[in-house]
Image (cartoon, rainbow, N blue to C red; front, side, top):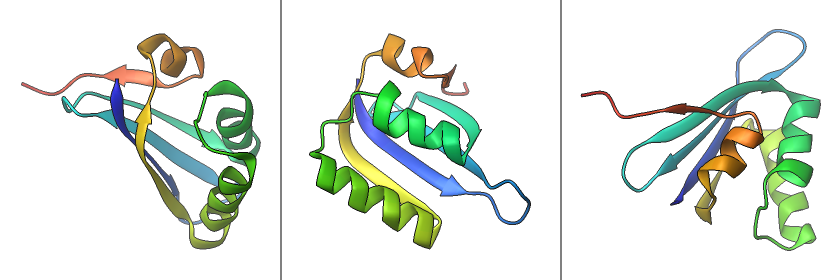
Length: 93
């Protein structure tokens, strides 16, 4: 599946919670809520993100500073997403 991984920090509260959503080109998506450590594990260990380490570090730093980041043009298999803890949520209708 080819799509976009969008991550946003929820406002307020401690610990910080992040909303993670991967949407494929067909409009289906996978989503999860996670804390900072779970998010770090997702990006650095669980998902095979095709970025060099410097670019991933830069994206993660921007996410921490700005509260959101979108990874465009990523490709994952469904079992990689569900195995990483994201839940499949099909299109409504």
